[in-house]
Length: 103
Image 1 (spheres, one colour):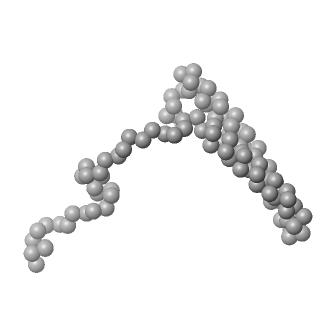
Image 2 (cartoon, helix red, strand yellow; image 1 turned 60 degrees about the vertical axis):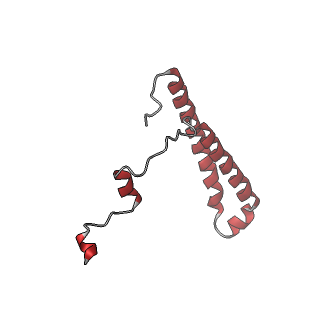
Image 3 (cartoon, helix red, strand yellow; image 1 turned 90 degrees about the vertical axis):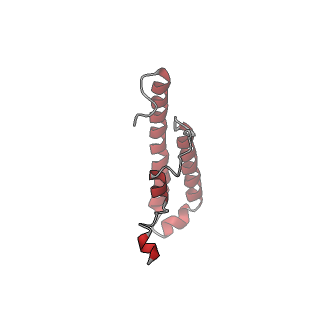
């Protein structure tokens, strides 16, 4: 009965602790503002996936999955479009035409 008289229990979840000021966010800077290394990594992984699927092309066709070979081709092509976009955006940020926090 004494627990009921002490008042409501203090919540210990991180959101409540943050709201009470008990937790503090660390100042963490973004690793990469340009996005270019991430896009290049993705393009390289799509290229590797294409080579691996190319090795198993006959087995894929036998199982009716020949279309799988076109998935990494599409990923590679979209990655090139993403690379073009990131380079154009980064150039505009460096020139001062766009803020780094936009989009």
